[in-house]
Image: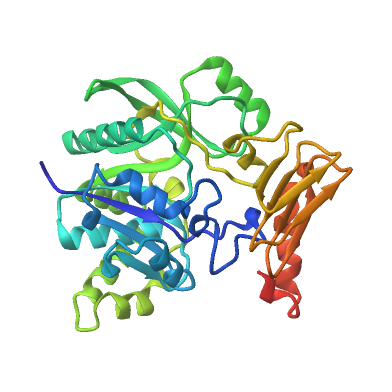
Length: 362
C-alpha cells in the first residue's frame, strides 16, 4: 500500500466561541466538546488510518505553541506555522508540498481541526474508503454529510450518480458544488434529494491535486512552485515561507479547485458530524438538567431553563429567573447573550478590534 498522510488545518479563530476562544487559544485548542482539545481529538480519530508520524498540522505563528501543547505526541517538525493566513487553497498547496517532499506520489487528506465526530470506527472506515478511491483513479475525493435539515450556513455538494463501489461503499460522482445557498434553495435541495453538506474534508494524491492547481489556479500553482524551489535552498521551509507565502493568492480551495474540477467524487458519510459553529450548538452534546440547562464548570441556575452556562477556574456563575441565555465566564472576560443573538458575537469582536484599549480581550 502506498504511503498515506493526514494534514489538519488548525488556523481558524473560532470567534463565535469568544470569550473562551481567543486569538492565541481558539476553538480547536479548547475542549469545547469532550475533555481534550478538539485538535487532539481530531488527531486521535485519524491514527489508525495513518500512522501518527504521518499526521501534520498547519497552523499560524500565533497558535504554534498552543498546537504543540495540544498534541505533545506529534513530532515537532509535523506542526508547521503559516506566517499569515492565506485561506484554504494556499494551506492545501503548502500541505501538498510538505507531503510531496516525504512521498511524491502519496495520498493525503485535508481535514478541519474542530469538528465533532463520535462514531470513530465508522469515520475511520469511510476515511479509508476515501483514501482507496483517491489511490484508484485520478480523482479529487470529498466526504459528504447527509443533511439532517435545511441549513443555509453550509456549502452543498450535488451528486451525479454512482461512480463505483469502493470498500463496500457506494462512491458517487459529483455534479457541482454550491457555496452556502439561501434557505429557500436549500429546502428545494432537500426535497429533490442527492445533496450533501460540504464538510471541508478532502483526500487526493499529490500528482492529482498538483495537476488541479496547474489547470484551475495557475497563479497559485506558480507561487507554490516558487515556494518549493526556495525551500530546497539553504534557508529551508522557514525562510521560504517568510519570504514568499504572503505572495500566494488568497482564495478558498472550494473556489480554486473543487467548483472548477470535473474529476470529483464524494463518499457519502454515515458517521455523526457537527461543526459546532457557535455556542448554541454545544447543547446537543451535553446532558441537560431537568430544566434544560447545560451547565459546565461551577454553574447554577435558579428558576430558569434552557440556558448554557460555562464557568472556568472554579468561579461560580449563577443565573436566577432567566432563560435562553448563554453565559460564559473566563478570568479575562464574561459574556452574557440571548441564544437568538449568539451570531452577533462577531460584531462585538469587531468593536473590540477597533478600540485600542480593548484589543487585549481578543
